[in-house]
Length: 326
Length: 298
Image (cartoon, rainbow over all chains, first blue to last red; front, side, top):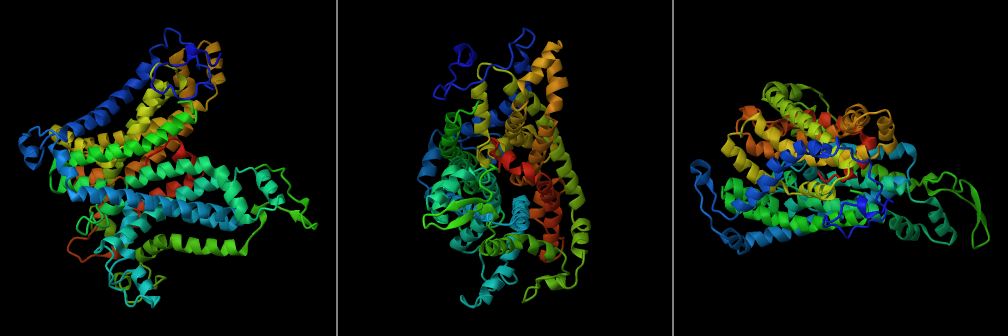
């Protein structure tokens, strides 16, 4: 009965999803309740249409115009066809920002995954008290709003009196770095922002992986040990294998989050020096709101959205494939 | 964890020795403890440094050799941050905007998620996927057109503009999150109510909505955190310092007519972060599931 075609909503463009384990419809509709979902959905539907869908349509529309500062006052603008897109694709800053966004996202995702999964494994080796300490530490780093942590970073790395510069100087390897200015050189600024983002990304990854790791079937580990596998072998062959679904989910979420990182860059470098740290999001904001070339900024935002949609498309597809009952 | 698995089962290893196999969790490696200590010290250091700087008097903040414990603790920085800036005004703005947006978003999310979980109708999956997809939009994609539209409608620099933008920001997540709570209510509860003659609306109001109150609380906390921390929309929409919300206040923190004051800045950071960190500590048990249950807002 549960697979009877009558209960399956057909023709939704997601036909590839498995149909087998669909539960029965919760209730047979009485006449009274037939329109209930419509009534219940309409407030949210109106809000989403008005505040999300319409703006996105307007964004795409704007990207085909020369909307700029003058337009904000006079309301005048002209259609320019694909000119904004041609300008973007021939702008070397676009390619710099695209490559930077992709590589920097990869670096942040990779760094936070390796550290996070490592910490999760570490937590399984700890006694209750120490594990509690690590958990609390993680929650503090996680809970800090990123506007506040960007301020803290500015103070930690402040040229002159920043405590990190002082520590680097104390190492006596790099000489006197007291006045090192982290945000005046692109590589240093990127390292700095990387640390800020990874610092806040690790807790979610570590705690989620840890939660999954406590669910790993102990008998598998036991069996591997009896077969003579060492600790490393057990970890890589048995535990990581069981954690695959969790790690996949975390990876996709991290890619989406890190691709969209904005505050941490904006509040430390504003995309500087010389647009060196301007990822696509920052660059689009700079063009739209600092240079007030809104049409151009809109075109960058459209391109960015398409890129992100391609990436997150994989996530949505795997979610549908996993047979989750939507 | 399967609790029955060989707590102290004797195992004969290939070399013929009998040893007691125990679960690895029970083995307390000294090495692991030390690594964990080092990790904890590094990871908590930024928070520690923020807190102790905020309690240092101005003369102790900028010293050639940093003071790792405050020698002359004072609350002067907090007093300054609260009394010499727009803190109270901006706090009020934040509270008004965030709470109105959350209330509104939760109410309509409650209805929508009920429809998307307790009813089956044509197009439901498409709607769910669309809601998931809009959550993944990059910030600038909504920011630019919302700014232009609100500019035309005269909603910039007003509460209502920011409230609407925050409703749009938290609504999709709230629907997904609440839906999870609806789905976990067993169908028998509804069937029993139906047996007693309850109609659709009675079941919703009297049976289902009361049962998702825990979901409403946890969803509203996540929504609160998102909206409370939101910076760039508020920064772009609000032009007058009197209309700033706290994140914008914090990002541009300066006491008028004074040089950069890191003590004050750190005190401001503590004031702003405190409610969020406390919330995180309270809901820590639900954090992991809540964040990954179809949640894509960072």
